[in-house]
Length: 235
Image 1 (cartoon, rainbow, N blue to C red):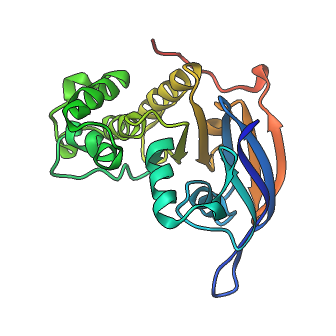
Image 2: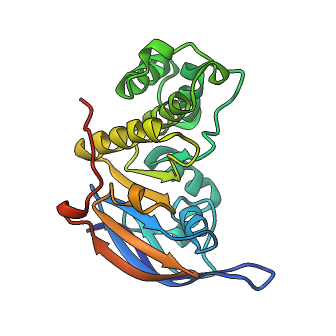
C-alpha cells in the first residue's frame, strides 16, 4: 500500500493560473523521492497540497489511505502535526528562542505529555549532531546548524513522512552535504522523505526523481547507483 497516492491532481488559482495539470503518482513508505523542476513548474504548489497546506482544485489525494476530502481543517492540522515533518529553505525558526524551544514547538499540539517534551526535543537535537548547540538561539548558529535544528523540529513527533523544501538552497556546498548526509541517515532508519529541489545534483541524492514542468510530470524514474550523487554517510 502506498503512503501517498495522487490521482489527476489539478490546481487553478483565482487569477486563472494552472499550477498543476493532471499530476498522478504513488510514494511508498520508506522511499526517498525528489520532486524536481525549474521555478514556476508547480513544485511548491504540489508540496503545499501534499502537506495539507492547500487543497487541489480537482483530483484525489490519499495520505495513509484517507483522502484529503475526508478530513475537516482541524483534522488536517492534527494529521499534519503528528504524521508530517517539514523542513524549509528559510529554516522558519523563532529568532529569539533557543534551539531546544524551537524543536519543542510541534509538541505543543501533539498530545504528548509536557513532562516529556524536553527529553523528546533533546533526543531529536542529538540525532542531528547538534547537542552542543541545544541552548543557542538561531542568530548564534550557522546556516547549516539552523537547518539541522529545523530537521530536529521536523523529527520530534516521529512523523511518517518528512517534506524537505529546497533544504540546501540557502547553504554553502559543505553545509549542504552535511544536510544531505542527515537526510540519508534518516532514510536508512526507515523515514519516508520527499524533497523539493531545482538542482540536479541535489535531486540525485534521492532514490527516485519526479520531474515537473509547467505543472505536469514529464518524467518519473529511479536513480541508479552509477548516477547517484557522491555521498559521505554520517553515523
